Amino acid sequence: MTERERLLEEFDDAYFALLMEGVANKEGEQLIALNEMLQDNPEAEVPESVDKRCLETIDRHFAKEQRRIGLRKAGKVLRLAAVIMGISVLLFTSAFALSEDFRLAALNLMLTVTEKYTQFDINNSDGNSVQASPNGNQAGSAYFQNAEINWIPEGFECIECIPDTRVRFGNEQGDYFTVRITPGSASVNVDTENPESLEHITINGNEGICTVKYGQVSITLADLENYLYIGVYSSSGISIETAKKIAENILIL
View (cartoon, rainbow, N blue to C red):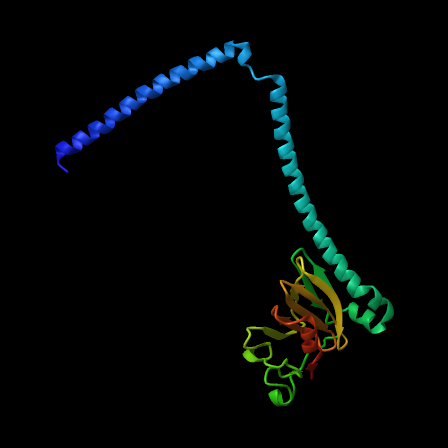
């Protein structure tokens, strides 16, 4: 672009800007005059009844929004309270009253329920600990030195293993489940936020909870005698009964 072309282009832009400024000023003067005329004309005033109805509509809208926000907050509190009450009742009502062994075990197991999870804590007041089997994996299994998995559903095979921590099994359909054994020295968090179902279970004398969320089963047991946690976590293609049977056939050595 030559200098002349550049100057002509700038001139066109400046001329257009000046032209639009004149139009805007003229339109503004007309709007100001119209506003003054309406203010001086009593017949142009908005009727008080219409103004009142508008204000009432606005108030109702914001009141509805405030109620909706309040209901959402109250719902979260009520859901958390329901989970807390459900776990407390399931774990400590009939079992505590009828079983002396459970009363002693309950004193060594603390559950902390929050809005999103339930935390298991084992009180190791006796100083117990799990010892590895003296003969290593030969006395245990291919996955845990101190435990055996004595039943695996047909069609499943090991697809991942971290020795003495967890093992995952899967099948050709894409279903899977994980068995995890965790020392009692650490806490274990279980997702109990808005579960589809939650129940107290006792498997092989170990107390725990079984939850279902998005169709996935989660079983967490506290083995107070051996001072560890046993977990079975499955995909949505595995039933609660199958997950429980897997947990029932985990033998701690």
